[in-house]
Amino acid sequence: MTDKTSLAGSRRIGYLLLTLVFLVIADGLISQFLTRYGLGSEGNPFLQGLLGRGTFLLVKLAGALLAALVLWDMHKTRPRIALAATLSFVILYTGIVFWNLAVFFFVPR
Image (tube, rainbow, N blue to C red):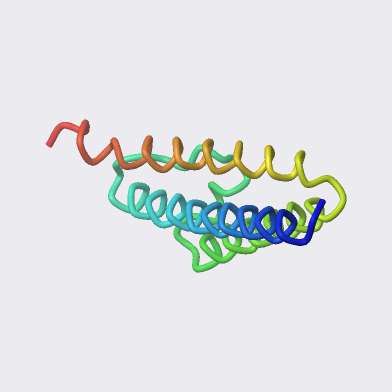
């Protein structure tokens, strides 16, 4: 791989990882709002007990950053796998965020 393509690949994975972290944070904020007002519930049983405490978003952020660091490190040795995994997670979390946002439009008032 040349330096130019390596830089482009690093930039691409970097943008995707940043997007992933923001999507996880958005998911956390929306989940916290929906559960606070009784419009929804947290789907992750490990995080359900943290809702309503100040640690919920901190745990979500720490998990997102840890995942991003692992994927970034994996990108050094297995760039194609890391890129595919990161893209898959971005697509998954985009779906989760849109699913959560759909509550605002489809919940009877």
